[in-house]
Length: 420
Image 1 (cartoon, rainbow, N blue to C red):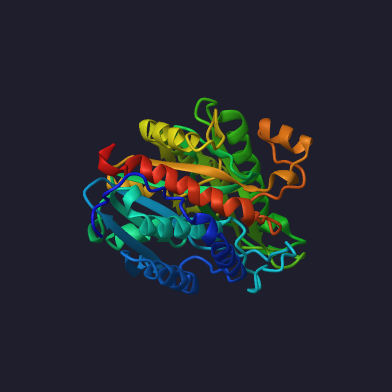
Image 2: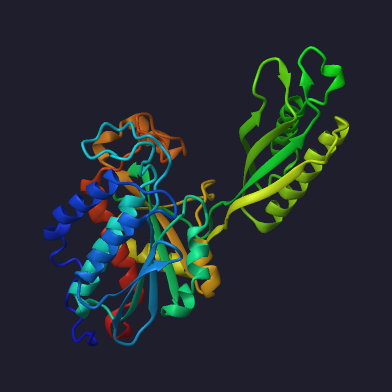
């Protein structure tokens, strides 16, 4: 693509005329959700859309099912824009006419919105080269929900096969009024670790527990002790959220089982807090198991780690300035969110600043005064389902254009024509 020759062109020129197409594309994605590393239909649709626009160099199969597209437009910085593609193993209950046609699978976290918005921005960038200068790397990532997609793409040479970014940018739709942008400099979203704890006992008949070592009772004791650690021992200055999400043990009422398995979710906001929590979990599990005189030591296996989402301070200021210049309201959070993302792995690996933000996906008329008040105090508004709920569904009419415009605004903050 030739270098731009004018700065008078708006990247939003003719966007309104393409919104019906993006609405239809979004509804199709929503109807056909695919789970982590199985996003074959989605990836093919993404690649086809990109190849329909002049200038995009499209690569498929990056990190499994990922798609990477590069658009070069003269000398200038390299901006990486990322959207995740995978859905969740949730049975949809929204009642929408375009609800999931795939039993037990649903876009319950808005990744279909992210894909559509990034494609919409890609179309505008290709159509209006006079409005910007530099290189855009559009990354459509698999498997964010299991915390493996970003690492898979990096392992497959994302930073070696494609232009290395000067900044990484990404966004996530949320259950608040469409148009509102929410973020903060520094830690934005928690690091997350899942842990599988296997407790070994000595099973037997329910009528003779004195001859057994009951791993189910041990598991219950461990859960209570872990909650005591999170509530009473974890330092307040290094917040820790520890949840026991599953306990599997036994098969019948009259049998004491041999083993019990706990699945834990740990969320922390600093490396120090993570290290302290891991050590406490190991100590508590080991100590409780020893007090039961177990025949075998417990096993603790971490899996599906998510990195801390850390927004670069200067780059976040530039993002907020660019978005506010388009008259979009911005809310700067006073504390990080406990949810997690693997987006941060990209900027860390590239050694460049990264910024992630959330933007509203719910029509304003769905919020009552009580709902707005709940938002201000950090609570979930009544009647507004949260992500990962079988009822969660962004409103595409106000959400898609907002998401596209956010990406265009922040991209041109780095890729101004003539290096302005």
